[in-house]
Length: 260
Image 1 (tube, rainbow, N blue to C red):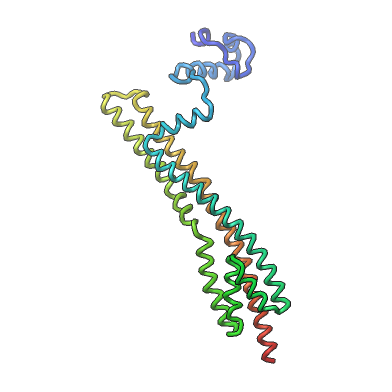
Image 2 (image 1 turned 90 degrees about the vertical axis):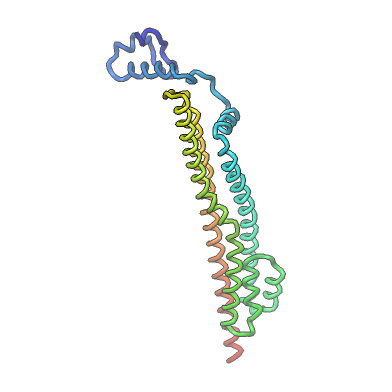
């Protein structure tokens, strides 16, 4: 009998022998049978691998599809790191320049504000400088200059986001392509052998599952990074729009005062 030939698994925390478990009513005995049956599957009794060894096994198991997936992963990491550093630096400069320019404009020190924005390299400084440079040409010309420069700075801030968006779409597709290739390998093995055995299709199915998992593992963090950068850029744009509007109002008030 099955219950007499296999020992009780200690990890389940049961007390007593397997024979005693058969006398209990409930679900325990079927679990013992299931555990004993799993031990008969080839590979179930192999020693546990470290995570480094497991990663190496999975890397080899993905076949040639591991190279395009690795390229997507490497490119995504590079873009995310570079974008985070540059965007953090620009955000810090933007907050500083907006605060200083607002104080100068409140005191109607336009020339000093113009020099400050000219000497500062940041999206907000470039936008404000484009407007201040034309402060003597009227409010409409100032608004037009701000809008044009704003579009240019917006495109610079969004640089790299198209790469992340593309990787978000391509990585799962490459994983699904690996799935199809793995199934093709499995059926070719069956066709060559003329019979269906688990060992024949295991290699193809392994490729299919590993590539699909790899594609999703790449796409999920890249998608999170893309959405994070979009939200952060939107926050910067809102701050710059508010500061630009304050500048226009101040210039309009100064122009009105001069006309009066």
